Image (cartoon, rainbow, N blue to C red; front, side):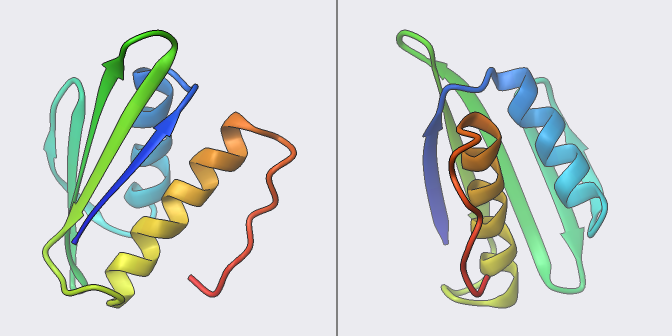
Length: 96
């Protein structure tokens, strides 16, 4: 599954958040300047970030699992935490 999110955080802030969030749950298998890949018994997740025109960063997350798998829930939860990091008024909710 692929997920996308646009944020006002910088690419470096997003990569640091991804390393912290996924690194606590999974082992890193690839580290690039604007990309990270993590793996565990749940599967693999890849995160890419790219500066988009203006003040935005586009986050792409791809898992090797079908939709609504446990790993997909973890990936979506990360995007929710990024949203909360960018907008302190956002409340993290959801069953994922």
